[in-house]
Length: 356
Image 1 (tube, one colour):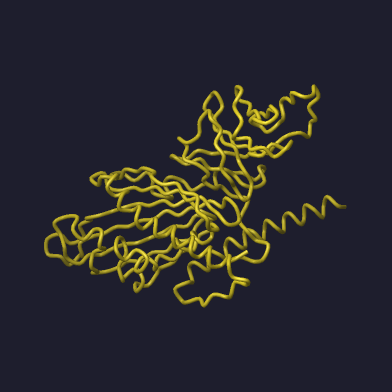
Image 2 (spheres, one colour):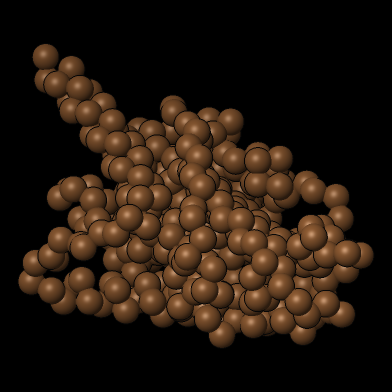
């Protein structure tokens, strides 16, 4: 499935953000993950639970049911399930078959995100989650807040591609956060087993439109733009603006600094969830910054939806005319494809072993 091999959709053995933690309470909430419905709620002791959102009896949405203690009760025929997925009661019969159960997903809470493990629960390892240090969420002098959740009618990799290629800031976001140097400055790339990093250090460039009149300095600036991609769907970014080092009085002074966080989660093959959070220096009012950032975030979403509409209407998706600047995004795709290939290989080995 574009842009991956036929039959490849998304990495399953991974952690994905499926909700803001404060969205989850004693009223069940439905979300979708990897083409399957998930019901989210909290037990009486506050622990978050994620189970299949489809009743195996008649496919009724379990999130439209209710809680009885820590059990989730289907609103159609009253069949109940515990937080471990086991069926605890069928009103129409006294016997509950041992095999009658729904899937329970491993859950982890980090900062204000609720993460769900989408694959084999035996492989769920919280050490695979990005740490607060890795995403710079613990930096002194900054404050942070979430502000955006949206279900987007576009496959998740379109948004991943968007965040892996920040040259688009110069054009799609030219009226707010972008400037020509986002496209013309050479990109420095780094790869580790956990992440891909793209970094641009723009020297002595005009300020971006949105920040051109923020303080008492209006000359050229040095700007750092960096994005770290933690596989398969979490991006943590840096944006810092300094007065150039050769300024006679204020050389090297930091005049603006932001942190951005994008969680991209595959809901279905043609839709995804997008969670956005922002950090800024404590001297920066986050509410005003959020209002400004809604413009470029909205532009990214509109672009993703337009691309999805284009490729789904084509009889055959033609090959892309890739450019040198696509190196980073293509590497991101290849890493995810390799992860999916390893999963497919493992499933094939398990099936062969079961057949012998």
